[in-house]
Length: 110
Length: 202
Image (cartoon, rainbow over all chains, first blue to last red; front, side, top):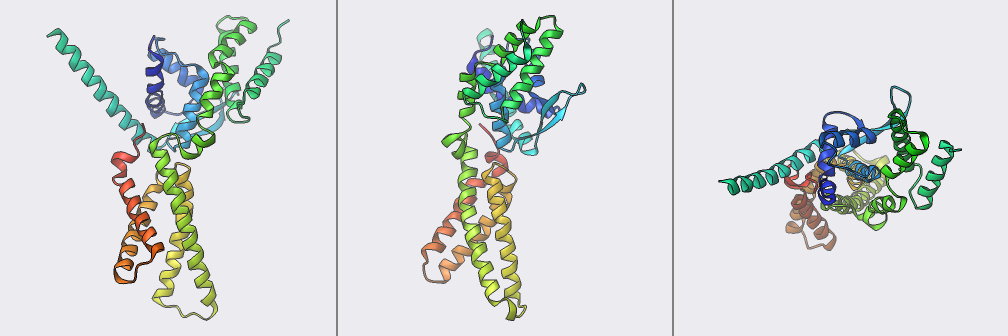
């Protein structure tokens, strides 16, 4: 399991990156993260919504109420242009952290 | 006998009692709960177990309340991060400035309106009036976190800083004009270069 501090810190970039692939809703976002992390990243479902609302208030994403194919009411979120810029910045920063860690790891085995 | 709808109503009451607001985000949480329940039932769980799983997944009302509280009250008013706080502060200051300028220009134009001749100065004053009015809208939107409005406020800041500095240099010192000039330069400093730094979110 991934530490909760890291899960919390990665929530924003993950949500923005998932929404960059297309409109989605809370339940689907959580399932997608679970699946992609092999079940190692577990968000408490309810914690997703304060993050989504914060991103929306900051003008990075937008939302609309809609219906699923079975008629179930859902709130769909999608990325705005400002969100794409923020996502790119996040990805750049996380890539840098990853590169530094990888470099250090490599040096241990040389 | 377990009644799913009654259990959902009880869960809802618990959430509302803990301070979760309705309709937002309560409605969204309930939609999520129902989605989670139906998936668990489809996977073979009985409704009672499915409800227990779904409620546990969503989290306790007290924990949720703490998370949502971060977005309301004083923290919500001044903004969650440095970018949001900057937007709020600049949005508020420019709202005051644009409202004041719009009122001042409009009242001046209206007082001479029936008898005035259409001169370049008169047209310029109307143009400025429109710019200030658009500035009021931009400030409100920026206060609410609409990032694209930074461009409009940035343009206003350049006009204000140059105009204010020119006035101060060519006329006697006026405290109000000095404040507006400083506001212009501070805004330019905070928003430049906005693409590289200010749209980044921590």
